[in-house]
Length: 332
Image (cartoon, rainbow, N blue to C red; front, side):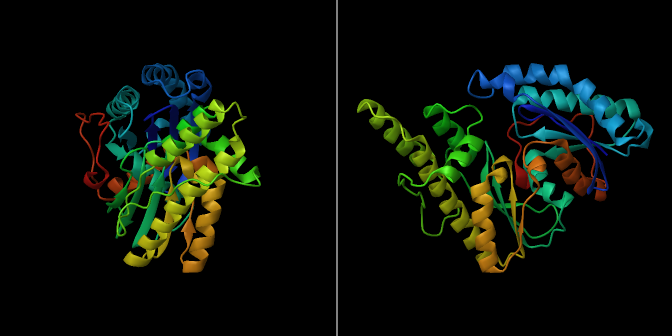
């Protein structure tokens, strides 16, 4: 299966065999382009996808060592994401499926992040998936393949979004997450910051108050003419985020009798989060499944893995497939 991912600022094409074997997975990142703006500019991202998609398709097929005639289906991210960016991938996928007379499979981006784990692990249900990325922070109960039930979600900023915003406030480069994570690991002390637990039985998340608390610390330091304690703030911020993520994920594992805890999304690359979740899962005697770093960020291999769910049931999309920036996971 050939898979295409263009939901945000990475153009990626992969060839995936039986939903588990990666024959190729090429990615063109736009980070350098968007760094000057401090974040992703949707129109610029769309134009970069247009420039890259054709040669990315060629490179993926060439690297896989196959001919187009060996393909069984075309998979493409249909949402959620930036509408212009999604459209580039959807149009390319439809054109290829039409030209080769192959089935077309639209894929939910978050389902892709979750099933990136299937490329390296065997999944056992029921399981809990903690999805943490720039646009999403969700706890998802899965009682069987392709069965998604969101039991907790962010009410405001996603965790990755909060990382980028506080990094920008402290003068760190975009994307801010890796820099905050590194500084948090290096700092010997931390500035204590609040935890947002919400209601006692809630699995929802909220990071806007934490972000405001960091901005308050930064602004007070500047007003007093003091140097901003970037590393100590980073350590305190990360500790707050991780405490809430780990506690709520652990409670969900216990309540629903999950056999595994999956970590997915771009923030799954965060060393502090991976380490703390591993410790907690060891205490719970539940396996923690985390994709390798190369499969945490947006990539097309994960889209090919998720698409196999639809291939298995022979559920294909028509050429009327549209880009859906608000596509719901539970309805996919």
